[in-house]
Amino acid sequence: MKKVANGVYSVSIYNPNMRSFDVELHTEYGTSYNSYVVYGSLKTAVIEANHETFAEEWLAQVEAAMDGREPDYLVVNHTEPDHSGAVAACCKLYPNITVLCSSSAAIMLKNITNDPDFKPQVVKDGDSVDLGGMTLEFYGAPFLHWPDTMFTWLLERKVAFTCDFLGSHFCEPLMFDYSIVYRREFSAAFKEYYDAIMYPFPSWVQNGLKILDALKPEIVATSHGPILTKDCVLDRCIEFYRKWSTENEAAPKKIPIFYCSAYKNTEKLALSIAKGVRKTLPFAKVSTFDLVNADIEQMADVMNESDAFLLGSPTINKTALPTVWNLVAEIDAINIAKRPVALFGSYGWSGEALPHLAARLQSLKAKVFEPQFKVQLVPTNDDLAAAEEFGKAFAESL
Ligand code: FEO
Image 1 (cartoon, helix red, strand yellow):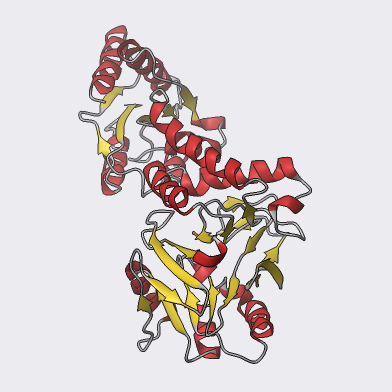
Image 2 (cartoon, protein in one colour):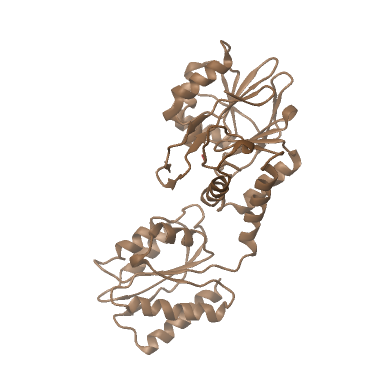
């Protein structure tokens, strides 16, 4: 148990050896699942639960912190399982505890605990709870990074509990910013975390920053990584979020063109289409990527960070090539909605790849450009000129 401020202690779980978070996210520097205890003169609150895997270890820390008492409240700022997996175990250990959360979190928690009698107390933006000289205030902070997210503000100590916001997958023995030994690695982890978790939500990030600008915290106690303090890196971290969330808007349009090509026919189309896009949008970043030897994870980052993209595939076995499907499987399903996508490819017999890809992208709510552009076998010069026109037409539609 580490002291964060007077009456505020960390009961966090440290996992320095973890190298894969939620199966997909590589965590080179481990992570932590942060949780805090706040003591008022009348009541106590636990802020954030923990991952189900660490329920026993976490609750042992909470019990030690409680020293024979029972916590009155469990505040759940966000219900992704790394924070909510141990809620059921906590409620079992402390049957009189009141869970405080947003209205959308309440729905999620019912389905996470699978307890029909589970009745959290919903708090709204601006609500507060008095623990006795320690006031917890709640601020809705949706899409940072789930719809359920809220911040909890400890008024008397100027501590903001922001869950994933300003977090990092980084773990050292002492988890305060001023004690970080490997500072460059922390900076890298902080940026990687932003890119992986917050990047898709720039306007919501700015919304979260507005809340913090108004509160002026001395300490931001996140749910992953070191606690950030005003005397050390907090202001810089906030300014990084401000910069990263606004540069998305000012940057030139990113329009990558991905393709697979068995006999260079689809590749020829890709290069002609790129010429057309560039002619219409000379300031856009238009790059072509041959998927055959590419790192699909890297390609997925490029695709998910794009403003629009094009996807080319030949037809084999009446569908697109597996490599193309592998990229489609990496689409960020939340942020693909309304993203303009165009499809093209060479085919031998009947060309089913493009309608199959279109159906999948439409089911993800992408804005699929029509018509798709397909050419049978080897493109002629006229076909390549038509491909260039196709690129221009797609660019004009953006
Ligand atoms: Fe750390 Fe969105 O969970």
